[in-house]
Length: 275
Image 1 (tube, rainbow, N blue to C red):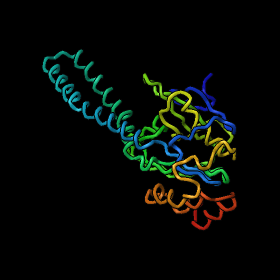
Image 2: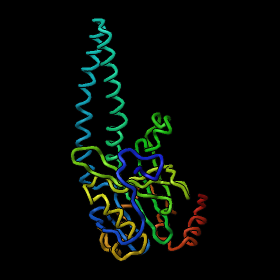
Image 3: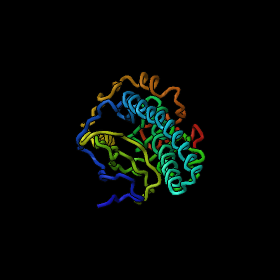
Image 4: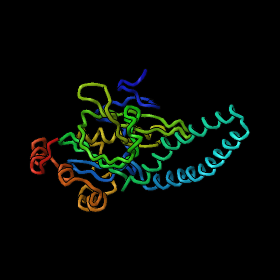
């Protein structure tokens, strides 16, 4: 059965249900939680270093291969071996497109996921906050102009009610899964954007962060407030080390702790936020 969220995301495995009583495992992804909000990082520092190193090697190795391919094409052109030349041109173009679409964005993402690029969930207001840099995004297939300006910054507030979880796989030998939040139009299954929640986890591990977040948003005690790197009383240290200096708007940082829709509206009004 295909995903109910359309257009369907590439590599889809399953849609995830919302609700409490999930099996949880915040692992090292959970940075901080109190009675109002929690913060998860999308990639640990060890993951970033590993993938940066691997992708850097791939980029470096691709340079001599591209150089040799161009020389071979020129040589075939001089020999007037048109058929072979066209084949190598097609292979070269396909390789460059793959490098630009798959390898470079992944390299960029790992390089600029500052402090793990935390995602914030406020269960009192039902809001979700992200602040991230990205190279393209999942909208690229619907907006070709993205290729002309791939470097983007996204600082945004979402409604938890409009976010739906899906699991996708990476088609590698290690069979690692990724949890994606599908941003849907209100009261529909039509997706308008996607947010990375939990990348590259094996087997049941790919469901644990989703479970923890759901338990937290439902105020289920299975989501312990002291499960994170920073304990609930260490909010000042958390904001100093993780949030400060990362470009979070002042109103949004205040909104992390909002305890009701009315308080959130007052914060937005005070900061002249019209969204």
